[in-house]
Image (cartoon, rainbow, N blue to C red):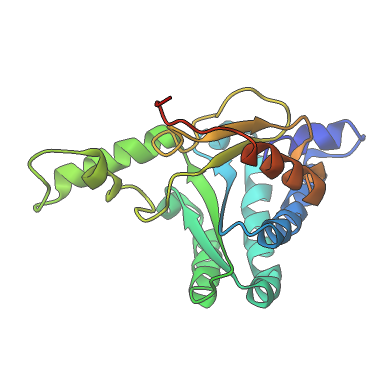
Length: 218
């Protein structure tokens, strides 16, 4: 979900207006994903590094997350979307935690699309948290393998993404799903997130379907 601020500034708007536009785009992309048969969609909403931004912007984003959660509950239920938040959720403001937990509970039985929202998330942080969880587990395995390590990630049953879409033209993964992205295909769109919609998602998926995924083989 990159490029909200740059999209707004290019149009003479405030960064806050850009974040609002980006938030509205979640529903657009989620609906397009359902139409394409996508079952799991993970969006990077707020990273562990985003706390470095001005406090006014961070506070606005926290309020926007809570507001969006409540406003979109009806649409999520209507479209069969299950919300799941991943990251260091316990460090978020109480109002945000309450909002997302309520929506997670309300949509728990929906199965059309799993919408993962990464909040206060960092790929390195997730790996560190997994290691610490292993060390604190009295029943930890004697030998760590890729299989049992996965059990300590934020969402253990989340399959590795097949496709990573980076909006805003940036050529980096920005500390996102470092463990899970090992064999994911990468698609970079020059579109900023607020203008990335149905047509752009379809283009990304179409290109992905034409790729030959070898997973290290021939």
